[in-house]
Amino acid sequence: MARQSGGKARSLVDRSIIRSYTTLVDAYADLVPEYKSWAASPVIITIEKWDPERIARMARRIRKVGVKRSENRIKAYLPMDELARVKKRIHSQKKADASIRFGAAEKQGGGYHGKERGDYCLIAGSIDGKRLNLFYRSLEMIGGFGYDLVLIDELARHLDFEFRSVRFHAARAMCFALRGNSNETFYPRLNKILGIYHE
Image 1 (cartoon, one colour):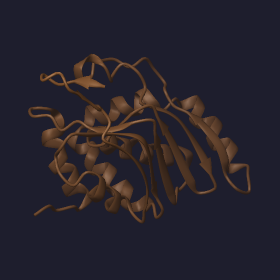
Image 2 (image 1 turned 45 degrees about the vertical axis):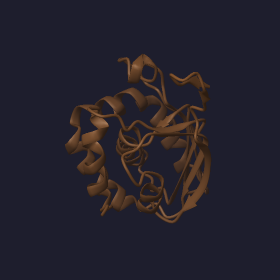
Image 3 (image 1 turned 90 degrees about the vertical axis):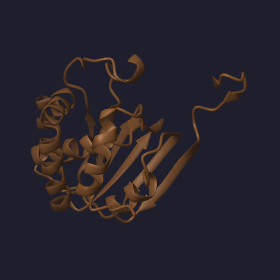
């Protein structure tokens, strides 16, 4: 609980979210319809029809928006020896079944109010057939989510594998819709890349 200036306690978490969507665009349009802060715990979001080709196009455009941020995310989260292990395992099976350990290097930076960055948000994954499960300590739904699309595309490319469904499991998720924050400029760009247009 956090205390407001009037002394009343308010929850830092607005709700829990457990939802299934047909497409990534459907999910994002529903979960982040406006630039407004919120928090939820726990969060489980399933995208039933993951379109690898469309995601790859979106990921390329996101990479152009933030080349350094994309490269840093890939470097921090995708250890090449782990990807080689997972690739060998899933390509030697009739039905893909593997765990993935994320986190390749020590992360740098202080994040929002010195709390988030510096520790791993995406901690593990599993592949079950054509479904990718991602497990998060925390998931930020604008910049974090957007740049994770780059990460998922890169993961698929390294594994030489197409995911057909993705499920995001987060102990907590939040939107940091702060004024003057990088999310303020990234949010409309991400919506345009995803093909979401708000009136």
